[in-house]
Image (cartoon, rainbow, N blue to C red; front, side, top):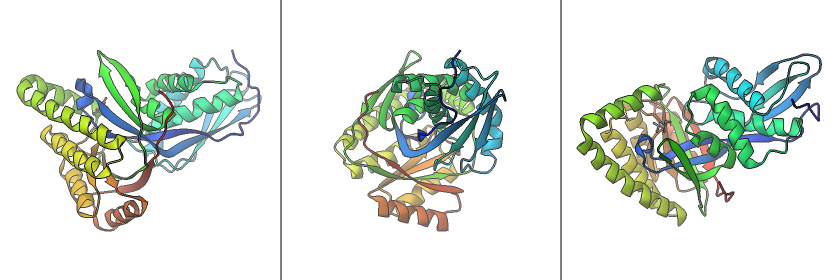
Length: 328
Ligand code: MEV
């Protein structure tokens, strides 16, 4: 069992948020998805509670109403899984976890992964573990089990490494690789405020596929062409083409029946107000929209317009994906 080597952490330990840019649902059926670790993050600071056992959390993250309370039980489990994985004993001296940072936790933004990545990094300092990036990623994957049961590994990978990442699931195993981009991506992310069950929607799409494989395979083929081109466009910094392909991916999500009126309204509004492209992101039938802007100023203008004139968007955030080269 490990003992603390410092009584409080000094460094800023962070885990990035994430957003799916291409491929939700299609990735479940073997296609490639593109996920971005956004620069906005959760940060974690730790204090040893000498003579007071156990783990307590002071959660100072700027969450949407209800989120932190709703997730408190899963978070407790996730944190315990991380402590156990890293072989840390809190039965004599406990740990107080302070969470903060600019990332606003909500469904679909990888908040739980950013929490356990930042915690794993902070524990590495406090207990002198010297964790590598891969070990941080693994620790967070174990922690993610507390939130998700069977995580795909995409969120913790994006939260650890940031930047643009390609991923594909083959026979239940997730494979990740770095996509090198040359310029930052400026994004507006909007929430419909509608929460949906990923398990339920994924199950319904599976049933639709089984009932009509010809229809599904035709969509999958179009999606494969779309993501192949999108990856190439991103690698050469062709944001205009990337935007068009986001629109195409949204159309495919509509045909797959995972969009909804609120998502379509926000997507259309963003495009009418200057976005290069926009699409739903994540489970769908509610949840999030991601829109791509040409630059920071345009992104800020789109976000202001959505806030003022698009009531379907209940929350609006401005995010950035920076080029990162760390190997995955
Ligand atoms: C949910 O955020 C993304 C889905 O593709 C499900 C998954 O990848 O596990 C809908």
